[in-house]
Amino acid sequence: MQEHVKDFLEAEVHFMASFYSVAAMDGQTAQHLQQTVCQYSRDDILTVMCMGHNRGWEEAASVFSGVPVELKTSNAALLEASGQSWEEAFYSAGFGGWKLVSVVIPDEHGE
Image (cartoon, rainbow, N blue to C red; front, side, top):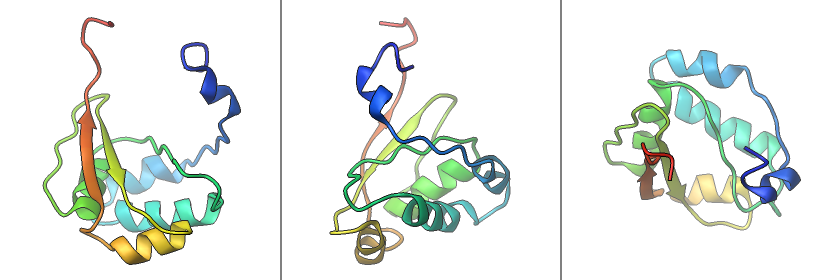
């Protein structure tokens, strides 16, 4: 992926095995994502990309945005909230207050 998007070369990367196991537990993923992002991100990091497996990710996107979100294979939910820190963003937006900017769907033709 880094060869296609050079900015990824500068990305701080954390592999979180729990992102895969927690996603299988009903109702746990959104809270776990919130705790993990707040623990591992710094306030100067404005964008965080979290990847894992469904069903929990679809559920988490719905919990954060307050609207039903359907995520199929390789889809991503682009969510937005604001704050001076990640803790403030999660606190001020709360569950249901994040803006669902879009659901990103890969081009099936590779273009």
